[in-house]
Structures are given as structure tokens and as C-alpha cells.
Image (cartoon, rainbow, N blue to C red; front, side, top):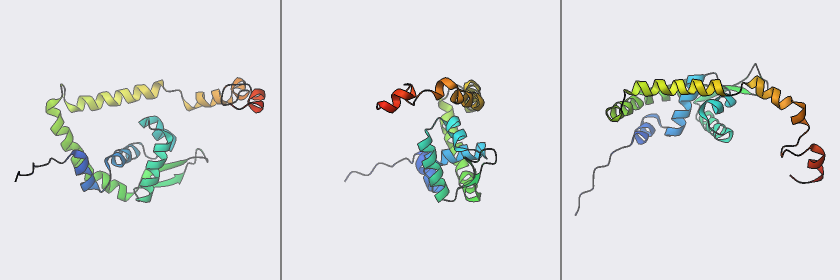
Length: 164
């Protein structure tokens, strides 16, 4: 009989065991905690995730009582999310595991891990600065030329008579 090879638990497996959450949701909850209170649109802009993925993650985190939703006083059509006590406990339990992963990987990096984290922050800030502001986006949406066109780019008179 051949003995079974010992298995190594991945960081994701350890994270699931320690936090009772999958790694994607744990990471997403980290974004919510970092940016709180935050709108789904802001989460999409910061993470680069599609709106449908944001919505699914928020639904799952709400079902698990990890986040709370509140009306957005600045925009009645949107809402704000922030971690609840249970979500904060999940993050607190997972933090040592994330630190352990950094420690395990750091010897293989050309620079200290902290430099990569700082460069990631700088990149995120640069991307945010390059992104059109909400005011400019809304102005573009209100422009007469855009209003005169259908979603497919044809003038509205053609869009009604033919399928796009």
C-alpha cells in the first residue's frame, strides 16, 4: 500500500475554515470595510467588478449578516453599505491568515511586501484620478446630442422604426 502524500492547505482553505467565508467574499468584505460607508457604484469603481457581481456579493453578505444597508442621504436611488459586528469579527479572524500569506510569499519577492502594497495604493489613486468624475459623467448623459440618440447610437426616430 502506498502512503497518501501529505496535503498542504492553501491560504484560501485556511481562510474558509477560520472565517467560515469563501475567499472572494472575504476579500470583498475587506473592500466594504476599507471604504465604509460605500455605495455599490463606488465599490464597482474601486474594485473593477461588474455591477452584477457587486450585487451578488452584497446579497450574500447581507444574508450572512456581515453587512448592513442604509438609505443614501445624498442619493435617494442608492444605498450605503457598511460591515456589521459579525462582518467585523470575520475580518478580524481572517487578518492573521492574510498576514501569514504575506510572510510566506515575501522571501520570493524582489522587494519587501510593503512596497507592493504601497505601489498598489498609488496605482489605485492614479486610476481614481484618471476616472471621469461623476459630475462629468452626468453632464455627458444630459448632453442634447446624447439625448437625441438611442442606446444603439441611431437617431431616436430610426430607433423607433427599426430594431437596434
